[in-house]
Image 1 (cartoon, rainbow, N blue to C red):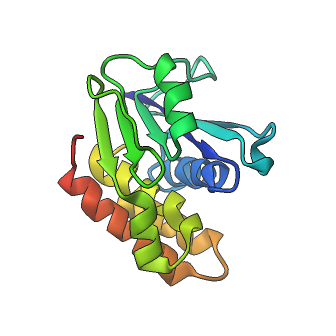
Image 2 (cartoon, rainbow, N blue to C red):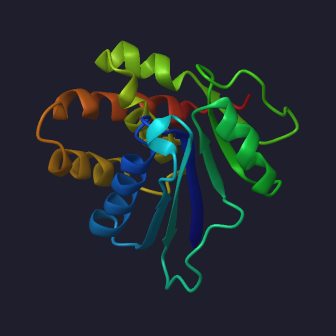
Length: 179
């Protein structure tokens, strides 16, 4: 099975890091074939940031996400921009902290990602880790154990807080909330 994932938000939200962690977890620990790419552009200045990850049980022949199976949107601009490139079955994960207007005809799953990050770690930047937990819990495309090990190996500081954020995201992802 092949799953195409697009992570999108604003520069500074950790979108690129989240895609790297997702790719490492899926490839190293879940032993899947993975392709990861990102677009920096003006993202460092708060513009739209996006990263794509393709996870597959078999070879990946085309290295680009055209119409994702999963779309994570952490800002209104990223939601508005990238819903134009989805299919009707795309699962859209939305952070209601920044995304206030959604197309209710789409397959939206609305979560308070930034609020959960703030409550768990007292840092907005960990919303990317919460989002990874949600992706794992909601879709199973990557295992919680793989993400946990990746976080343990990637971070030198704040490991425990990031794991707590991951678990909180996973817990609400398992519960799912279609909005």
